[in-house]
Image (cartoon, rainbow, N blue to C red; front, side, top):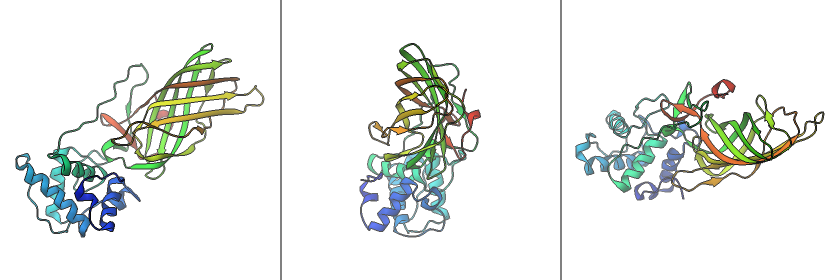
Length: 303
């Protein structure tokens, strides 16, 4: 089953249904999958029918009437712009535009089943720990415009744990969607068992590629994460670490990645540990969780 579930968008010619589904998942890329001015075809007709049904069912919400003709002309583009404004669907620059992309078609899909558009803001993360203040990123992309993917890289930026046997720790990660090039910052706060002195990382470790069992937005990792590993004796700094990340595809319960070995960077203190805890996104776009169209560095983290 795909992302789209309304009868309008899932029935009919297979090639048309695929175009609609690709638009909803941002494949093969955000730009290529968008519907915009001067496009024609049955996929545009389907979107027009969905858009028209919203207006006819809710004439009081101020969305202009349109003709269903299979042509993405200026009149339809303006109708999409007004719809996006009513639904508060913004692009990567936090502007309202006239393009049908991932979140616009998903919104129309929901409206085709449930009626009028509703404002659905994402809650602003409220940090409970000093020093973990989420921060706005330059060249950011709000969660509403982040496409889904199953191909990611993760990098341990910094972190460490402390305690005798019972430990607490904090680890900062950069996750990158290798399909879209978007990156997001996360913190994993953990508790668990440790053996030997405190173990800490410094600087960036190497990136680790991983895949998810189902497509997910880059801002939907967490709230669960676990990390464990060991460091050998000084002079033979063999580091071994395993990471498991939780993630939440839209409308589904929590899933977990397969355990993955990651590079912890230079660690010279021997020890071993296993931790489980809460993973939270730190990167913002405006006042909401978001990603950025660049590779993160240590300055993007509250370290």
